[in-house]
Image (cartoon, rainbow, N blue to C red; front, side, top):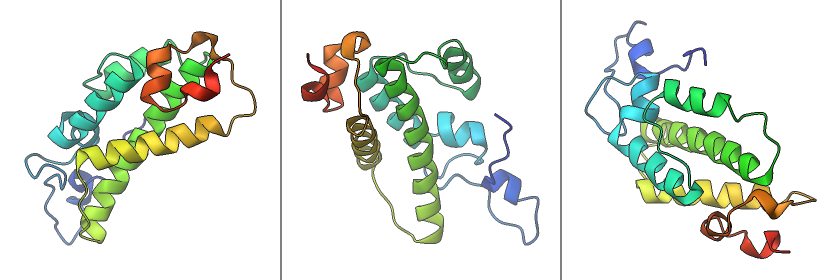
Amino acid sequence: MLDRLTTRARQKKWPPTLTDTCVLCNNDSETTEHLFFKCYYARRVWQVLSNLAGIPFMDSWQRLLMWMGKRIRRKSLYWTLIKLIWSAAIYHVWMERNNRIHQQVFRTEEAVCEEVRFDVKHRILGFAKLKSSSLPVSVAINWGIEAVVQG
């Protein structure tokens, strides 16, 4: 990852000067690392989603990239699900941040997790062929796709 997201810490360098405080937790400077992993709000989202997916919680970009790097090329349904979760979580945390800044719309961590679950579930359900052998039943149940992957 190139760390090029226009976070508030990066925007602060541009005139006019803005606050660089994270809009999700209102505690620390909004860097990419903070926004997606150190912020209480984002950490809670990742913890819930990691638990639902049966994967370890990653507390930094570096750890996530190292962990995913070893597995990113796997083609099984399980690893496709993990990649979709990863992508959807990043997207929805970023959208929550933008909605708070630009529309003053605030959602709970639980609401963001449900959005991720909805998006991932419907993306998986849209696949023509599902090879379920690599998907643990508990994970399929957590993501609402157990009926599709059985048999």
